[in-house]
Image 1 (tube, rainbow, N blue to C red):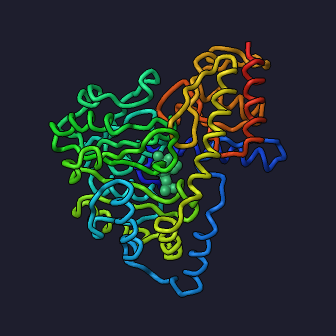
Image 2 (image 1 turned 90 degrees about the vertical axis):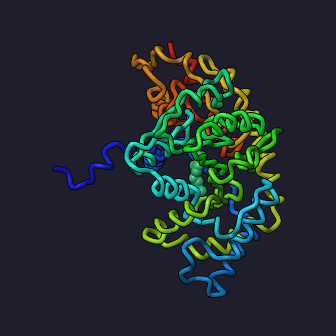
Image 3 (image 1 turned 30 degrees about the vertical axis):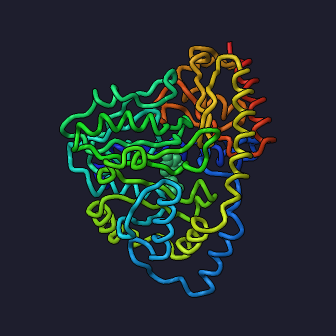
Length: 399
Ligand code: PLP
């Protein structure tokens, strides 16, 4: 009998992390690998934010903090949600955790009982289904077709709601597709949700600031009457290049936030005090660096989309947000490598790119959608140029 708890049996390790680790192993062996599998900006944390972290250490802000986060941080989050999103939350409706990831997990763990269902539009971030299972719930994946911009349609939402539905998870801009829901898209989904008062919405807005030529909107803003059923999740990882600082936050109904704080209080206690003080600067300070991030990402996105669409058997849309291109690779499935092995699915294709051409990407199956690969363009234009050349050569070598 295994020593490991049964609840882990249904949980798969993240394919994103697995691919990044496989690329790192090859790199260590001296293989020239370009990793486009990572989910983090390749920029440094802005200097003013670094300095705020250093000042926190020097000023003795190195002790335990309240579980929900220090008040000055929750106050600037409150102001941010009001300024950027038009949302009105009290400070005690806000909680801070070790990344948006912990906030999502705490929310699910705080609310799911066995048999409770969570609707997850797919393609989706690798962690949602597994977090739902870990929390004892049932993920209900709803395919969102490329043809419709990978977005959930109101009628498809309506079709999967049951009395056991507890959450709808909406992630916009989306990882892995880069799809962005407009205020009108959200309002149409809200129409359905109004008929089903048991359903709450977890709005994962972590890529909010990374949008190209479209306006960001979040559910509580599009449907203010539903605000008591919405948890708005965000953080500094992607917008301020702070993935390693581990700081995310959630704003929502008081009883849910209180329950989430109970879980956090018995697990991590809180995220690092230093990160909390640095995040005050990231959220309330000058954010002009975001414009630079966005314009740099836009250049890279346009470059990758153009190149990939030249590859035989691959095609992709131009994503509106985040820093990923989700590439349809149907055209290479069933083909043979120069070694005579068949590319049976998108994981085979991702492994072929890694092992034969030294490019690490993540297979769509990791995001509950096949046959696709996700390319992260959070890499320099030189790396992207080389990687795209290799991908083109890899496709050409198939027969
Ligand atoms: N939500 C989505 C959709 C993500 O892609 C990620 C990270 O990849 C996260 C949440 C986690 O963010 P954080 O680093 O704040 O935990």
